[in-house]
Image 1 (cartoon, rainbow, N blue to C red):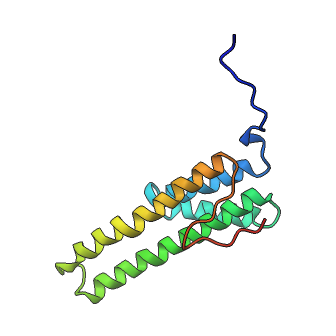
Image 2 (image 1 turned 90 degrees about the horizontal axis):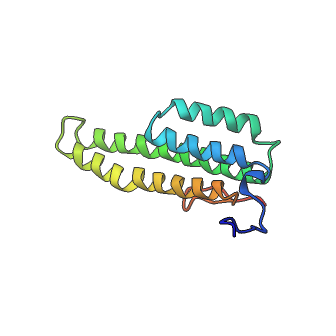
Length: 137
């Protein structure tokens, strides 16, 4: 008796565009958590290279991660503008804005990326809620 059960479904790794989709989601999360800016440049390079000639799965995840990264930048700039308008970086409101930004915006973007990575790993498309691009299937 073997431990492996036959799986009638194809392995996700064999899906067209699987590697690009997983790379896009991983770069999105790296941009948010480990190497901001550097991972964004790598994600943009991946998007520029594969945005027209890749399978639908890869195009979907590339579009979602680039849009999500742009929104992350807009929200970060918005938080900094709020800090400046509330009295600058030495004002007591600075920490309120920083904590609100990280608890709401940043954590939500990471959550979207974690779900997107899970969907990419299972070779499924995903649309980021609120900030995602429409899926072209």
